[in-house]
Length: 235
Image (tube, rainbow, N blue to C red):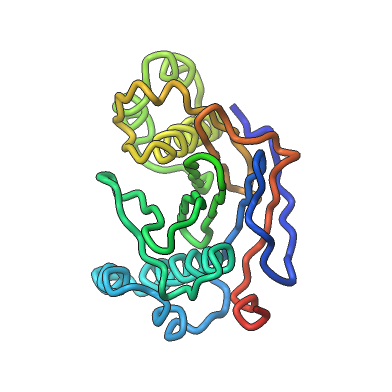
């Protein structure tokens, strides 16, 4: 269950045009890069700022602010709209979609620790998830509660790092698939069967998955970019 695709990220000198039919854009965002928290916070909506203030740990609060600011900066380039003027609507499970301006851009953001991934499509809803590969308590009870029997049957004989790698491979797959639908991990939606995924390695020590109805485009049709807040001054 190891990821089969290792991503090489490019450092763009500006923002690309939106993905065409049959393409997908992925952005890798470091949440520990130097950036003005004040400027980033100014881009957020009132509800995003309120959400950040409810976070007790400063490092988590700063990472949330940078992730949401990066999302708005990237979308603003695709939408040709100021970052602070983008409005989101949120589904029952919290998945955001663009409410204003109207535009056929689909996106999904995932962040964990000091990294975030953003997937952009102009065809179908997309889901993405990433996780650091690290030993954690209670992975087996979580697997038994969340994964179907056939997956647990495959996981059960594994031990140590093999189990950890397989667990997060399956976890990111599940998260990406349900996020593509705007559902949660316990979703029983019949539509879930039509959601296909690709697992990949976004960085050393991490695993991720991207999913869409019918499956993401072939990896050859992915454009992969490394986001820097320096892009704000180049556009």
